[in-house]
Image 1 (cartoon, one colour):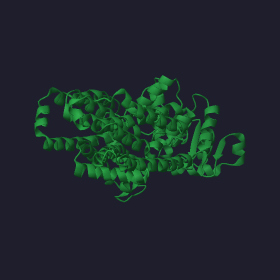
Image 2 (cartoon, one colour):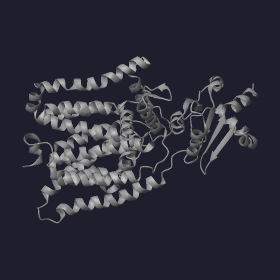
Image 3 (cartoon, helix red, strand yellow):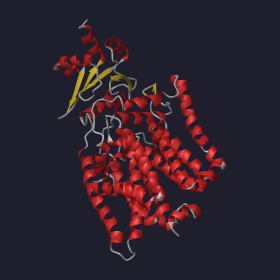
Image 4 (cartoon, helix red, strand yellow):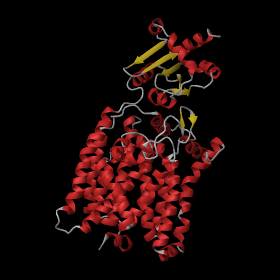
Length: 498
C-alpha cells in the first residue's frame, strides 16, 4: 500500500524496526554536536540574553536579566534552557547549549516522520540526513540562538496540519499547539498564517468535499482555542509588565527593517542556500521542490513549497539579510528532497543500479562537503572579543564582590560571564555620571558598536600607574581588547573635566 494512502487509512507512527535507522542518524548527529559544543566559546548578544534569562528562571529570580524584567524575548526558549539547567543541575554554558541540540534532534525526527508518512523509510532517511548534514543546521545546533527550536516547532506545525487535512480530529489540536509553541519562540511564526491560508486554499481546490467535511467537525473550530490558551498568559503578562501586550511583536517587526549596517541583493538567500545545505544537497533539494510541486503534485511537497516561498519571500524584501533568519526553510527543502527520492525510486525499475545509487551519491557528496564546510566554520569561527573579553570576565568573576555593580554597553554578555549585577551604559553622559554613584566597575570594549562616544576619552587617559594600582585593567589579544575601570577612577577623571 502506498504511504500516501496509509496516512488516510493506516497508522501514523513507524514500526519499531523503522525507527532504528533514524536512531543511528540521531546518535551520530548528537555525538558530533556534543564534540563541538564548545567550538564557539563566546556567546554573542542574543545568545547571552537567552542564557541570562534561562539562568534567572532556573534560579527562581523571574523573567529578567540582571534585575530588569524582559518584555522583548518570547518565553519558551529561555524556559527550555532553564528546564535543562534544572534537570542537569548545571547553570553553565554546556547545559544551555544542550537545549539547542535537543531541539535539533526534534527537527530531524519531525522531518523523518512526515516523509515516512508520505514515502516510507528510505526517503525518510534521505530527508533526515539532508537536514542533519546541513552546515547551517550543524553550526546552529551548537549555538544558543532561537532559530533551531523555532525551526523544529514550525516544521512540526506544518507536519501536523498535513495530517490534519486528511485525518482531522486531534491533529488540528496538534497543529495549533505547535504553532503556538513556535510563536512562543520567535515572532516570525506569524508568517505561518499566510502559509496556512495557502494550504487551506490548496486543499479546497484539491478536494472540496473533504474540506466541507472538516468544516463540519468540532475540532476544526475549537483547535485554535488551544493556541489562545497557550499564548494568552504571556500576552497578559506583557500587558501587566509593560502596558502593551504586543510590545515584543512591535519590537520584532521593526528590528530588521531598521537594521542599516549592511544591504544585500534580493537573491542573497537563493545563493546562500548552497553553503547552507552544501551545493550538492541544496541544488537537489531546490530541484525537488520545483519538480514535486509542479509536476508530481505531491501534497507534502506543495506544503513545503508554500513554507519556503512565504519565509524566504518575506525576508527577501528587507535590505539587511542573514541566512539564519530564513533557516526555518531548511526542513522543508529536506522534506522535498526525500519525497522526490520516492518518485525517483518509483520511476526507476527495482533492479536498476540508479534506483539507490543516485540518492546515495548525493548524500555522500553532501556529507563530505558538510564535514568540510561545517568543520571549517566551527574551527575558525571567532566571536567578537574572543578571547580577551572572556579573560576580563573571569577576572571580574574572581575579584568583584558578589554585590558589585557593573556598567557596560554589552550588558547581557557581561552579566552572563561575570555573573554580577550589570547595568547598561546610558546614552547620555549626565545619566552616566549619576549612575557612577552606585557602580563599582565600568567596562569598555573595542568591539561593541553601541558604546557612547563620551566613554572613549577614558581609554586614552589610562596610564601605567593606574594599571599598577589596579584602577584600570587591560585585557588584549591580537584583534580585540577589553578595559575595566574602577568607578572611583572614572568619577575622578570625569569630575576633572567639569
